[in-house]
Length: 201
Image (cartoon, rainbow, N blue to C red; front, side, top):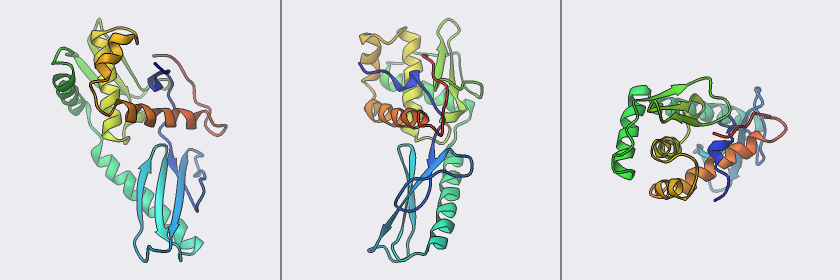
């Protein structure tokens, strides 16, 4: 089994301008602008791995492009903020995931966001039945947060990352996609502009 992306974490990366990638003022947001001659007036944006893709009409000027990139990043951020789960939501979601994929066998006593977890996405203490998720996951796609939750729920049942552990995770149909997303973020954090720490979970 390849190295798990939960063992090595960096902050969620986002994105910037014109048919190429670039960094924002903080040096941690990447945006790729794609121009289309078929696109007349509409502008759209979406997350793709560790980048944000902004689709614009080919005829836009550089100033219009910069303005629309800013508008679309703000719009995406606002949409993601509305989707952020609080601790109560996390507990409910953990229970749903345990029921669906682990026959309800993983029952944590606490599930919460933490802001002091900078070297991993999630962690758990089986003896206490506690699960902690890094706040840096907030705003990532729901299936990625679900994967990290399931990863930690599985650790309540199976310590380590042996075959039995991965058999549990393989029940989640988006495991490989979520791992790929996190691996992309980890790869981005290894670039010279984002030297984040790494540690095994």
